[in-house]
Picture 1 (cartoon, rainbow, N blue to C red):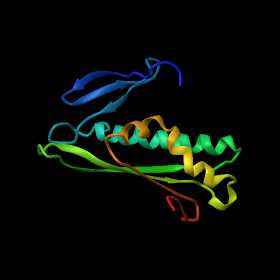
Picture 2: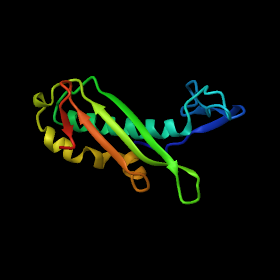
Picture 3: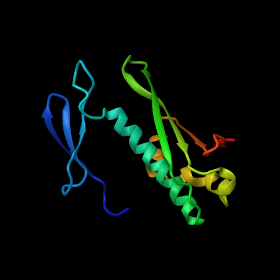
Picture 4: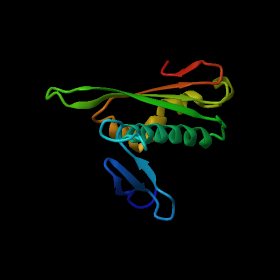
Length: 149
């Protein structure tokens, strides 16, 4: 990764913001659900989930490709548990990420080695997990749970 990642947000209306991640591309949108916003974009929690899930998916793909393995297509789903802290403020209490690879795990060489270390190379989830538990599961195309075992 080169440079320091940055974004620029521009308020469009109420709680909706245009989010520019690349000034040469159209923005993506963030918004809050009613009653604050109109759900015309992803919520901040969804953006956090997307960042964690995307980084973990990238890390797994990169680790497998280092061994010339092709796990595609990959589909990842992420969700979070939201609850109240001691001050009764809403917080993300835990993140759950399920990565589904598109081939049987038995067809991938060095899979145990990859699964043992791919999370360590994920900048986002490794950073987020310092404050929020990130729980990762990897499943193959046959529905077999590969990680954790």
